[in-house]
Length: 168
Image (cartoon, rainbow, N blue to C red; front, side, top):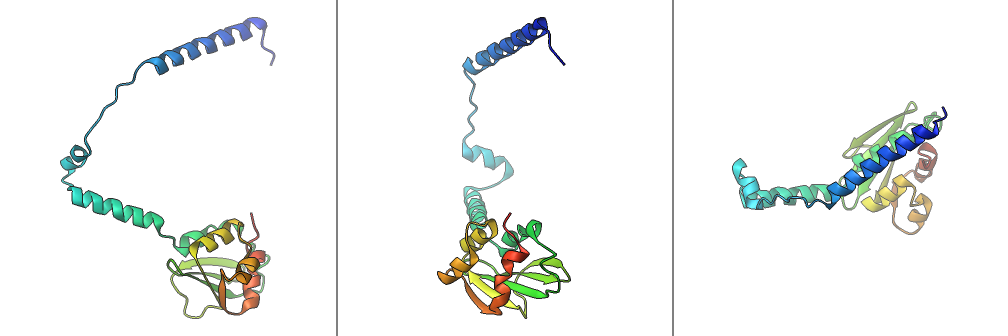
């Protein structure tokens, strides 16, 4: 729909007016409310020690990497056609985290935390290496050759991971 010159003029004037109002608001000094941190928590009965302890636990939890969280990112990339006839359990042991595993059976994927009693292959690595594998920044074969990944069990199954989870 074509806008007439008068319509364009009116739109431009309205935009200019809005810009002037925004500039005025930005030029107006904002009143800053300051609440001392100790007063912020005291109404809830939280002591400084409890606050520090909670903050430390939150920081620790944010640094933890579980394979279950990392492996769950693979669900969207799962290729069930490549899993045809394959029944395998990939165990992931993180040297700096908790274990987790992927079970592929009947062209379906199950991701679990913990250790499986009978994995087909176990891959041992740091969480950063696993994260790099998941997002495609790390090539599995090169990481294995460089010693970043150690494998125990059926090595042929480890090579099938890229077909099961093609890079996105």
